[in-house]
Structures are given as C-alpha cells and as structure tokens.
Length: 353
Image (tube, rainbow, N blue to C red; front, side):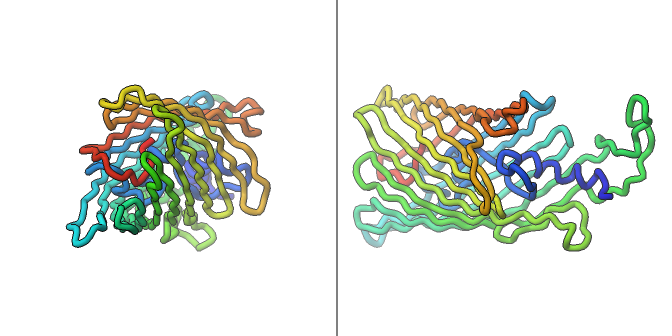
C-alpha cells in the first residue's frame, strides 16, 4: 500500500484542480478566474504589451473558504517594462521585459509552491500606422515545492481512542524539490479603429514537462506536470461615448483535461480627465476531459474601480457543478490590482480591463 505521505504530497495537485477534473486527478496548475488581470501568467507574449512604460499587476485567490478551515490560497505579482526600440523607419517596434512570482499554499497539508520567472518579448509592428503588432516571447524560471511532514499524521499513529499519539514507521522522502520551467507564447493585436482592439494569442507552458514528485523512484511513480496549452481572444469596442464592451474567450488544455472561459466586462467611464471608471462583468467556466463531455462548472461575477491608470478588481466564483449540489460549497474569491505607469495615449495593444 502506498504510504499516506505520498498521498499528502500530491493532495495539493488534487485539490487545486478539482474544479477542472470531475474524475481522474493528475498534476495541474494554479487557476485564476481573472486571467486577464494576470497577463504574464496567461501568455508570456503579453510582457510589455500595453500602452505605457511599466506595469504592476497583482492578484490573490482564496478558494473553498466555506468548506475548509484553512482555504487554498494563490498569489501572483508581476512587474514588466516596455522599451521602444530606436526607429529607423515608421515601424515602432518594442521589447518587453518582465518578472513574475507565484505562491500557492494548501495550508491544511502545509504544502507550498513558489515560482519565479523572467519574461522577454518582442513586439513587431506590421504596418506603418502601427495599428497591428505581432508579439513573441519566452518565459523561464525556477519552481520550488515543499511540504512540512511534522504536521502530518499517518494510519499507524492512531491509538484507536482519541488521537494520533503512536510513532510512525513511515519513511519520509525529502520535503523540498526544485525544477526548471519554460514557457513560450505569441500574440496578435489590431487597433482596427479608435478605441477599438482585437487580440488573439496562444501559449505553451511547462515545455519541459518536469517531474514534480517528492519520491524519486521508477518512472511509474513520477508525477509529470503536463504541458499547458492556452488560446485566448479579446476585443474592446465602444458601445456609447462612455461605455466600452470587452468580450473574452479563454481555452486551456493540460493533459486530458480542458477548460473554457467565456464572458464579457463592461467599462463605464465617469471622468475623462482622471480616467475614473466602473467595471462590471460576468462569465462562465466549462470544464471536462478531451474525450468526454463538457459541463458547466461555475459562474463568475466581477466588479472593479479604475482611477488614473490603476484598477482594483474583485470577483467571486459561484460553483454550480455536481459537487456543489451535494452540499460542498466551492466558491472562490479573487482580488486584483493593476497599474500602468507613464501611460501614453497611443495605440493600445492589449485589454487593460
């Protein structure tokens, strides 16, 4: 029988992707409902793809708080810069450089995952008006995962009465692993008319498919972090002088599992000079396996406040899948903060809300 240590070592993976996997559980990734608020997580080609000189982005996710004493939490922070290249023609090419940090915690099992990555992107103008860009990027870094075995209990420790007081005969592996990670992405953006944007992109994450198992045994005991493929699309266009619509579609496939997010945000501009705006939005998440049927998993509501380039966003996922109907409340709350510094009123390359 496999030790409970091994089980606890993979519980992080089991729980953090339970919203994706109705049956079989394998190594997956962290998840943000406000995927557009963490652009370097979604696609490395978004590094430096904005209308300004630098951008700060942060997002925090709190998941399953109603069902767990210590909920799952995910934090991501990022800083990226856009540098214009010397222009030898009318083409305004640019490069983007970014740094992104993630932290995932499954506190019930004292399991922590940390990762830091560097991103490099090149933005190539496709026409003299600089309204169309194609961007390509690489992102690489180091990931580290650890678990505290001191706070775990095992079957042979139970005293048959009132607690886990006996010593354990379990053999512990190392409680810390590290591995290299590599991602790549491409993105196309078209500012087809004033204040209107079309964007389509794709990315491949975990190109190296690293082994994330604590036990270094035969190949059958490895836990492979599957490559994650993402395709995303978004638009921004005015529906009135003060209101802008931003529909989005986001597709993820990792191993045999897939997810589709679709919905839209609306931006209501209250003050042109200070760029004060109110944001609202809603979208749905559909999950399933590649070779099986899909199912509606959750609905997300979003509200945000924008002031002079800074956007504070809040969202809540309301689980509507079968597990929620059984009484397991699987809601998730997210809060995001983004700021674009030295904003320039030029061509916008990517959605900023």
